[in-house]
Amino acid sequence: MKSQIVRINKIALAAFVVALVLTASGAFAGRMELARIFEHIPPNGPAARYGNVTMVFDTDNRAPVIFPHWLHRARYTCKTCHLDLSFSLYSGESGMSRKQMVNGLFCGACHDGATAFSLHEESRNCDRCHLVQPERLDQRFTRFAHGLPASDAGNQIDWHETLSQGYISLQDSVNGKRRTNMTLPEDLSRPLLIGSQSPRLSVAFSHEDHFEWLDCSNCHPLVFNINKGKTEHFSMKHNVFGWFCGTCHMRVAFPMQDCQGCHPQIKKRPML
Image (cartoon, rainbow, N blue to C red; front, top):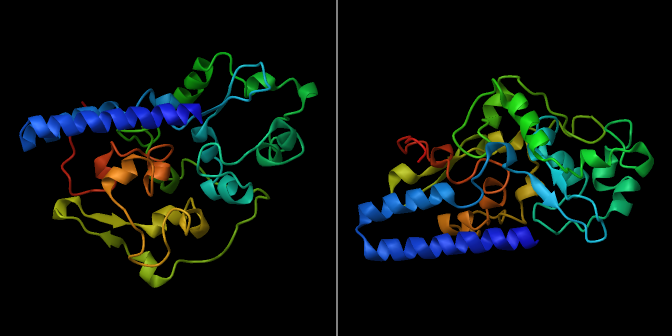
């Protein structure tokens, strides 16, 4: 939770700087300054660590647990953990403990010694989660990412292309069975057009692309009101602060710095 607060404070500081810049300069100069700030606000950082979650347990004297999203999303859909295992999309809300995990809940559902390495003390696997040398995980990521379809932002992997080109094959549930044969209704198979004041900033949202990874209940109604036109306060500002699309796209999925990921009509520019 502390790290999340620090992240939010940094974003708030960046937003304040943006406001000063836009007030003191012309529109074009303001946009350029905004772009430069946007490159450096969280969650930018080493590609190998984008999406990693650091967990500190107050009663544990060992090194913090570092959970690599990239390692798990190469094997499982998001819905496997965020639906089957009840992991919240929001930091600190799951309320998990080591006792629960050892008893087969949360991480312990797979880390049972059969599906994945055991969490029990006698297995002596503590250092596989409590990372004293996180740079070893960075090196493992570099080897994994080599040769995969690339992106300019986040962990610099194009996960949609990585999946569609067959580099990875995803398990859709904890028990390994396909969750459902449900197909999207015709009206949801078409892109959902989200307009803006500038036509080139319009977004064509694909339910189909997201349905590869997520279940409807991951987003509705907690993140988005399921009734058309009833999602209030939807704006780029709120997305950047981690609301709506930013729930995932500022933490695990490609961040807002990758403008063209949502706004394909924007001319691609080199990262600053």
